[in-house]
Image (cartoon, rainbow, N blue to C red):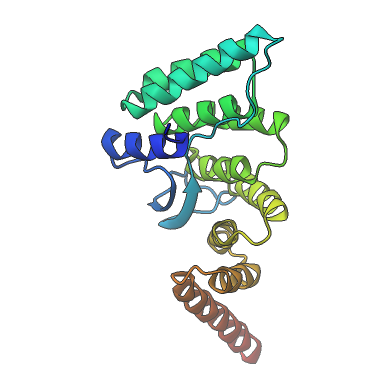
Length: 231
């Protein structure tokens, strides 16, 4: 039985290097940023990301030969990915998109670009995927990851995409956790706390520590404000 592209990317990422792990994985990053009062530092941001390749379930139309050619290129990209040739996979996905853009081909192209650390190109590909399939929470989630890893980071854009992802998948614990992490890093502690608590309820046990940490930060802020008022 043919393996799914999810399995293919997991295997390829495992052999291609530890810097970009595939699947639904926990990722700790030190985001690159310039010293600026307008751009918060996002240090040691703990993040879930979805960077696996997806495939279209629908068969290509017999009446449109370009669909068949584009699908062949995407399948070749999956094959290259299985072999650990991420650059070759990227080239095949780009070919598929050039022949006939589909949400899956654009998504897969973004996956390969991201794995090759071409963050701007990954953002472009995932944006194109969203123009074709705007109800994809995974594309929004991946865009958020890319914006966090941009130089400088763009937490505002990440928050926007995570909020849209959460609207599309309100019971997804990883989206809730990611949004909480970015909100916490930008000083929005109370909404972050609510989302961490939601993550715990939905099954992310490690978020319990985040709940404790953010609760302590809120108490410290309140104590500081009380002290300032009494002076």
